[in-house]
Image 1 (cartoon, rainbow, N blue to C red):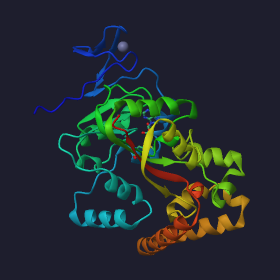
Image 2 (cartoon, rainbow, N blue to C red):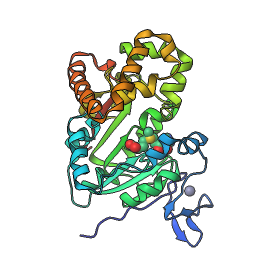
Image 3 (cartoon, rainbow, N blue to C red):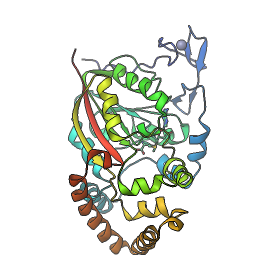
Length: 330
Ligand SMILES: C[S@@+](CC[C@H](N)C(=O)[O-])C[C@H]1O[C@@H](n2cnc3c(N)ncnc32)[C@H](O)[C@@H]1O
Ligand SMILES: [Zn+2]
């Protein structure tokens, strides 16, 4: 049987696009969407926030995407880290949820530079608001498209899986309904949608952070990459339920136990002036981070501690969640 190609449609009117020398044309909208370095660009409004963000050191790191090392030994170490660390938890979750299927199409929303994990399970299309990271995604994925995920340029029921990692918390609250409707529209009946989603939280560390609104805005919303649409974990679950998705699996991530780098990253600023305990925590983590072996041991310990804390605390104490839903067959 011939593999179904991935047809792009106009994000404004959902008509088919025809390719010409100028790009992809939508006749009803009288629009021509350019193809830039092989990447169809179906976006009209530029996001200054992400354009600027991709110029920062953290943005440059995101833009590279998540790919293994060429050196097999380093790859074994990376695999071990993924298997046991707090940061590897989302990969472990996606591995549990996604199954390899012949000719499957997977859509990675807000893909950044892409993730080679998804390519193990089928053909992958990555969509992002920014062209800079899509250059890397194009090398990993079958298709990379410059588009807004709240207005997807794909036909109805195209994908077997729709996934995202650290993206839904970035989508402003007023665009979330549109995004979930779009996920539902492009997902096949019986298809799975799985996400790692940053959230608000009511754990003690997060409540302390929120008690200082200016620092919180800078360190927990802007500098972290634009968490403009954070909601409480339970509110996120309610949203998916309202859109008629059936829960397959939910897990917590990022309670109050973080990696040593994360404590430094979030709190090595004005927060150290607000609490002696936080100051001690930041100084300790900076010391631990100096030596590669000490750093590894400390983070294994934090990983074990996190396991217990997560299993003992309520769902809304998470600072992020891993969710998988199925679209019903009817
Ligand atoms: C934290 S990064 C995550 C990137 C990637 N998923 C990863 O795991 O490395 C968030 C990404 O979402 C993208 N993004 C934010 N809002 C978007 C939107 N409305 N449409 C498409 N992409 C968006 C940003 O450009 C950025 O690449
Ligand atoms: Zn159109």
